[in-house]
Length: 151
Image (cartoon, rainbow, N blue to C red; front, top):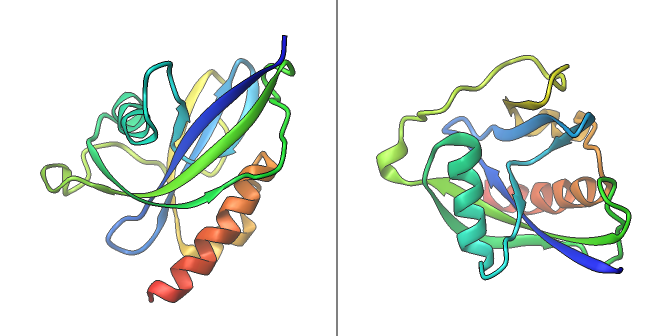
């Protein structure tokens, strides 16, 4: 069976302009990516992204503009029967969530056990983050191009 997996991810900046990166071990596989995940049946992009941030970080967000989506085919590394299409949005914490209410770490390594670690990374260091997938690598280039114009 051939199927498609639709995914949404968020570019969340803190007050210093650092970007939140997720270092995750999922089904034994190490991943370096952005917060977010799969769109469930019956959900729209914004609803799914809000749900994912609540599940992963326990915070409510406002979804802003879509900065990138992959328009090239990508086979899922988790399940090869799926083709993945990912959408990347700028997001912001809702005013009720500021200051941040979730825990971050400084260690930029994938956990040894299943789970996620969230790290704030300065924009100047994003080029050096070894994102796991080609989609995230292309998305960060799009983000950096837009971020440069926002300064």
